[in-house]
Every structure is written in structure tokens, then in C-alpha cells.
Image (cartoon, rainbow, N blue to C red; front, side):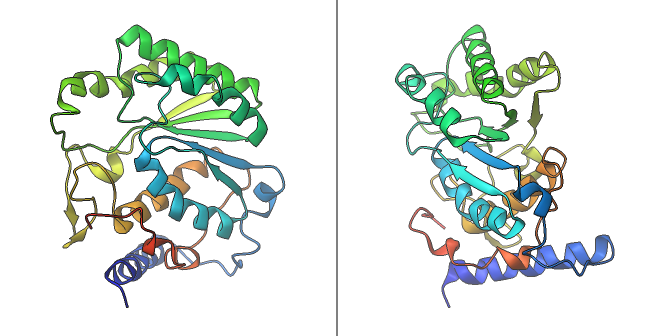
Amino acid sequence: MTTTRRLVLGLTGLLLTTAACSGPSTTTTAAAVGTAAAEQSKVLLLGDSIAVGQALPLAAAFAAGGVDFQSIAAEGGGNVVGPASDERWKELPGHISAAKPSVVVYQITTYDWGSEPEQQAAYEKLLNTVTGAGAKLVFVTMPPIRPGDFYQPHMAELARTPDVARTVAARSSGQAVVLDAGEVWGTTYQQTKDGKADRSADGIHTCPQGAARFTGWLLTQLAKVLPGFTPPAAETWANTGWSADKHFKGC
């Protein structure tokens, strides 16, 4: 048994224990969970390489919950403002429209650099693009990072992105929300949690345990946005093989 597989097995037990303590269990099968949502809902994920890793358990979880899921998160990019975003915008509207999503999740990226007006204009453009495709927009704050020389000059810009996103959401007439992932990660980078690797040693990415914790949290939050969606039990997705993916390094 691999180390990553043991980590996810442990997390599965933790999530199941938490669920058991929070209320009575249901006899609904995984195939039946989210049936109403499955007929009409699709989640599209946008983000950088952090989101690429998180897309792995999310794909397994949404499949278990009966909701279509697609990720167009990108290694070394995925941002709607900042470096190379002009090139990305040439293709992004078409990608969003072609996906036919009901909800677009944009995890704010580590490349969302720029002035406050530039960030706000980009987030407003994303909102207009998403709503134009008939979907709602969910901003998710990025996990705290341990910046090296590459990121350090841009930390002030990244620090204000949640407030910029909240400003855009507040003016969206209910078409956008902002989810604070600090509920998962805390306010500072922490490599381990409960004695196990939670974040990569590179100071940026997540390990399987962290990605799974994030998935459990996001599923709960999206249940408020996706009509008819009930988050599937952790045992249906947490140990389905995704944790062995080569994306997870430094764990």
C-alpha cells in the first residue's frame, strides 16, 4: 500500500466519523445521490496548477454525486489577470461556452497579479462571460503559500484578490459568490496537518490529504448552489485511485 493511499484511507475514516457525528445516515445509494442535479448541472473548474491537483478528487466526487464535471485548470497559468492572461482570454470565452456549465468555479490563482482596477476589470469580465453562458460564478480564494523570490514581489496584489472578488460578487445580483477556503487551509501555509502531509513541500501545491479535505469542503459549499445536489459520502470517492497521480509531489 502506498503512502498516499494510506493518507487518503485515513482521511476517509476521518470524514466518515465526522459525518456520523453530525446526524443520522441515509440509505440513499451513491448512484441515486444528486439525481436531480445530474440531469441539469455541470461544474466547470478554472484555476492554476493548484486547481489541477484539486480537480483529481473533485472529478471522483462529482462522478459519485451524479454531477458532470470538467476542469480547464492549467499548469503554470489559468489566470484571468496578470501574466499571459491576454492570450488566455482569446480562448477562454469559447471554452466556457462549449462546456455548457451551470456553475463555474474559479479558484483565484497565484498569478492574479495587477493593480486593483485591473483585477476588478478581469473578474467582472469573467462574471459577464460566465453569466453570458447561462451559468453562475463561484470564486474560491487561493490557499496561503510560502512565497519564494518569484512570488514575493506580488504578495500584496494576491492578498487583495478576495476583497476584489467580493466587490464584484456584491454587484452581481446574486450571480456570483465568494467562498473563503481559509476554512480549509487557515491563514498561513502549513505543510502538515494531523501529522500527515497536507501541502507540498514546494510551499504552493496540495498533497492528496489536503486536496481531499478541500474537496469535502467545496462539495458542502456547492450544495447551496447546485439544485438537488447532495454531497456524496467520502467512502465513494476518497480512495478511488486519484491520490497516486504524478501531480502530487513533495508529499
